[in-house]
Image (cartoon, rainbow, N blue to C red):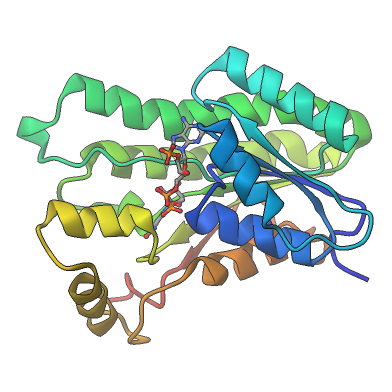
Length: 255
Ligand code: NAP
């Protein structure tokens, strides 16, 4: 008996990285899963690799979370093909780092549109179903960068915005049996942090080693670390927790 037997979970940006790790954990614990990502074939390939339990299904959907039309069509497909929607993880994300004086308006808008507008559009489309069935779990991906990070004015603002969005969802949707929380990861080994290494002209392994040494628990994080916290926050064991942001960062910001 899994914690998510009979549930349908939607994870955005889940073709790889933290999203795929989280989708995998939901599948292991009994959920049917929709993987949403920009490219439908990558989403479908990742969906086919999920460790489904008996009777559960997985689908991959090509969808741009920053487009209302694309989101509405994507969520409609989830409901039609998987029979409903109970859990939404707003995970899709991009970085467009630069120091403020070099940051373009386009890179500001791109980051805001994927993280903030994307979470808004997906949540709005899903909450209709959540309110009707008086049940739903929303999990948003923030970041330790919400607390400020050189070269990430756009990303930090978006990720702190995600925390305010989450608190407001907790207030508005609580009376309808819906919980909304956020996770703020620290350094997680994915293609996103590998791309940061490349931008800094550093070897990936060397970059991970440096980040591990600077962390109180002396290692980097992995998608499974976020997935474990995500599964708890989206489970019924966490039904008295809402509007919160949990930092899953090995204590990175304690100092
Ligand atoms: P990742 O490996 O880069 O994966 C992100 C996924 O999101 C990619 O598959 C990407 O697709 C997809 N995506 C981008 N824009 C999208 C859009 N408009 N619509 C749908 N999908 C879209 O990133 P990650 O490291 O797993 O990060 C996942 C989340 O955790 C992000 O919100 C990130 O900001 C947050 N986070 C990560 C870290 C970390 O250390 N890795 C730390 C704190 C927070 P394409 O490949 O086609 O672009």
